[in-house]
Length: 143
Image (cartoon, rainbow, N blue to C red; front, side):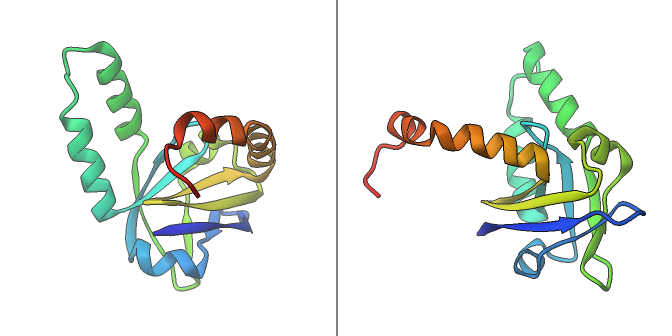
């Protein structure tokens, strides 16, 4: 399971260091794709296959399902760690997420998310303000 928040910077070639805590679980290669809320989703191959099966089960007769599957898969790229624990993020993915220099990597259960640090700070501040309300509406158990 992925969890935690880590700050790293893109180098001039578009490489990003993956936190050591995430590397073993991601494996030598993994899938990076456009995520929701202007971030990137990073999946180990096992989780990617589970997600792929779910998306294949969507009714292709629905235009919204076709659009989502196209958008999600067309942005996907297989990435590998180099010897220094970095990944080279494709330019199209960096552009989509607005990644320029400072990045925040989040462990989110079955995936890692990569955010531009400023976008994450704004998103996080907005979400924090309504966290209790969100929990009350979504979570049906005691902490």
